[in-house]
Length: 78
Image 1 (cartoon, helix red, strand yellow):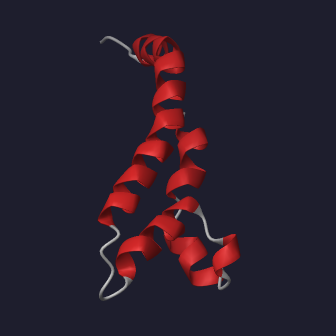
Image 2: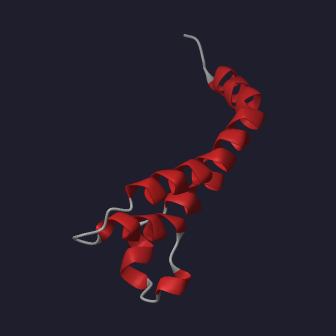
């Protein structure tokens, strides 16, 4: 689950390395909506975050039983 989520939220490394806006990650693209001094694109930013959250929430709901069972199986007593 965390491996699936990592590319969606990768921000710092691409911010340093990538210079062309065509190759920005999702996080960088959304950040540019609210980065400008006079930008009022908060509705577009909010819509983008909802669209990003949908596949992550879907994967979480599908893999939730494996996550819980893995946590329960990994717990030791004593």
